[in-house]
Length: 119
Length: 111
Length: 99
Image (cartoon, rainbow over all chains, first blue to last red; front, top):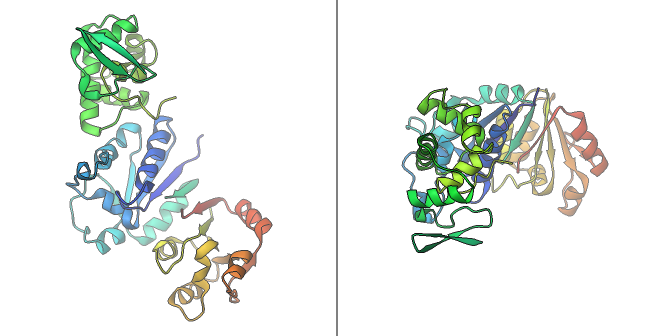
């Protein structure tokens, strides 16, 4: 049985390679059928804003790429409700279907996975 | 890097035979890329190539085998979305070969 | 399944420590390395937050990073060297580096 991995993505989408790297780990792991979860925390929740236009920055469309996660078998997708609320996204439509978790649920989530990586 | 001559036009390819400029893609170019792989494109092939282009339009990346199978099963049903069918059509490496013929970038999450 | 959380960024410019404290489990541990040892600076809210952690959460700080920054570890924190750092990583079921 493969070890399960939780990827915590906490970088804003266009500030550096962190958000892309977290997604690449998720897609690569998913392609090999590893049990993977992904949690958007802190500025990482900005990746979930709807209507972003990364073409303006000559960047690849991370938002479109994120939509591919379920196709790659990564269906356990979570976001911190606190991080969303702090950033004015508490009640917003997001570009990805994530479960919103409060702080105590986050602790339980980390507990559940065999391995955790934070980017 | 190499080139493929189609209809008197030289099309630039990378070292693995993928289009350098995805805008170059056309159906005759897909036929020529397939011929270079000794493959004759049938309706079954075209169905998957069109599917891959739809995948790329939606997600902006090339799928590895697993997501390709899943997407095909979702859009075309499980009689098309299974590894046997796709392997048979694309010489055992559907994600790599079909992406090449569909004019997509080489899938990165694929060994 | 207890986790060793490793921090290496200054808590004065960055939210890693704050976020980490919110999702710590009762048996987890915190290891401060690099600029994260500035969290032990006396008279700061960061040190206060660390002092408020439940006693079940172990707190470690890397010796040479403290010394380099002229910091003393408070009683709450255990000072470790590199061999102990490695030993800690094997002692906990998971290691979560906040990169």
